Image (cartoon, rainbow, N blue to C red; front, side):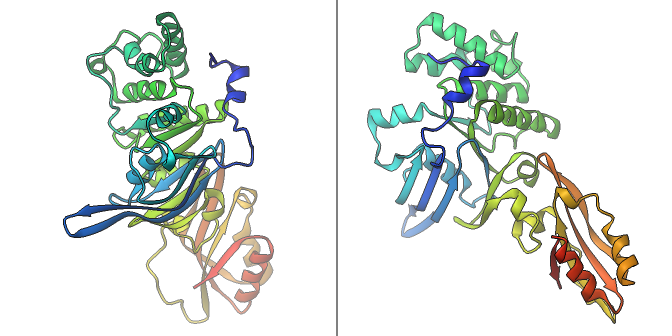
Amino acid sequence: MITFTQDSVSSFFQTENETENAITFTDVRKVYQQGDHAIAALDGVTLQVKPGEIYGVLGQSGAGKSTLIRCVNQLEKPTSGSVQVNGQEMTRLSGKELRQSRQHIGMIFQHFNLLSCRTVAQDVAFPLEIIGYSKLQRKAKVEELLALVGLEGKANAYPAQLSGGQKQRVGIARALAGEPKVLLSDEATSALDPQTTRSILDLLRDLNRRMGLTILLITHEMGVVKYICDSVAILNAGRIVEQGPVSDLITKPESLLSQEFFPRRVQRQPRAGAVIATIAFDEALADEPIFSALTRHFDVNVSILSGSVEPVGDRRVGQFQIELVGERAADALKYLHELNYAVEVH
């Protein structure tokens, strides 16, 4: 039996092939029949989640997010397409094979799904009972898991005695009981207050880094993507309309994610002789006094219409909508581009 020790746990969570995707969707469709009408909850979804990545799926209610995540462990069977987890084709599994595969896929839920008649320790031990751990093994593993999620001393408490954040920590401990390689998070923080949300996201990021745990996280909250995700897919009406590394998308002014991160002013016509542009930049350029440099070198006046510098994960990124007035405005924008700023002229 593998235990969550500092040395052993990281090696356990590595895939056999470092280049193999942890999760792969290929042209996945899920169609529900309602009377005479067919409704496509997923319509040709293709995405790849790398091992050890925190991958967010962002979208509003009805976009197909919950259907997508439930297709990973086959709680929902796709109508067509391929779903692979660590190289195993999930759509071909059934019965014993599917149950065994699900042991390596943990899942946490928006409303915790705890068993009200069981103590915290008994709830966390439940999947261990199914797997076949002995009573002594269950006790040792439960103690280990509760320490991992910061719930020492809560083993004999019941769900009704816990806060929302504590309940979610129990859910995370239970999801880790089978020593999964992949953790699915189904709107796991949307029922929590902002401070508790951050503490749960910090825990998930810590588990991801310490264990190499791959996390597929669905959410309708931009702040969650901003705080924790390495990559993201934006889902709308069952289709992915944008996907990629968060750090790449947010520094492209034309991307949907970037425009959600940095809302722009209402479009307006530039003043006579002026140019309106959006510039975006990452950590390496965040502290540069670029606007004063433009004024000094190109004799242009720079007005900031909107924008900010924001923390995204462990980095800072920025985007500003600016108006430049002066004969050399075009030269100033060319200069920004040469310095690796992303520039979009309106």
